[in-house]
Image (cartoon, rainbow, N blue to C red; front, side):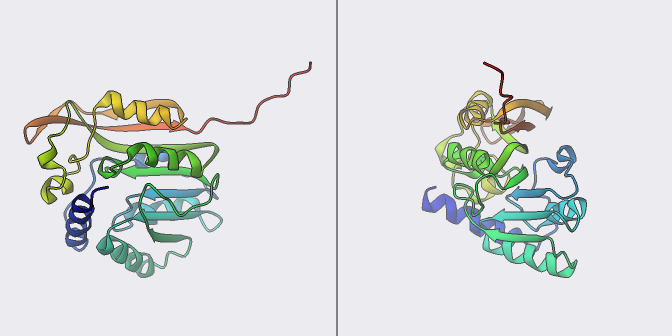
Length: 220
């Protein structure tokens, strides 16, 4: 990611960490259905709201990681975990392109309006595939653009906060998901296009899985 874009994201989201505004374009957690005992990850965890909700759902035998790159959001989320005495969760500061998690260690990945920020989205989806267990699932709410986003918007702090500065087209988005080796892809919800700046975008929630590598051993 270009330094100017990274700085815009960090500054803008750190500024918003202690405000009451809504920062998400969707509700991936509403489709995720965490199961007791599962290991879950929230990419772009912000203040940690969904991390706390999932930690309650998976119970003491499960665990939840929140991943965020913003100094302010990471600090706020950690304080929230402490405030609500959440012991089965951890907030990690990292890039989505290099998740600090072991391969094949996660049952569920969710994300709300975060992957569009990444410069190397293919790498993010590759990382999602890497950390998921065989048969593990993802639920991602995000924004796609109806056309290429003009370069002038990419590092605009306000546009970054509105979650569409780095969006790609619908076709390219799905190509990136499939290209990472994920399958059983389906659209849980999708909005009609709406105007942002000089272009139109749409919000949606995409679900899928890492293929189950277990195969029956047929008799030869």
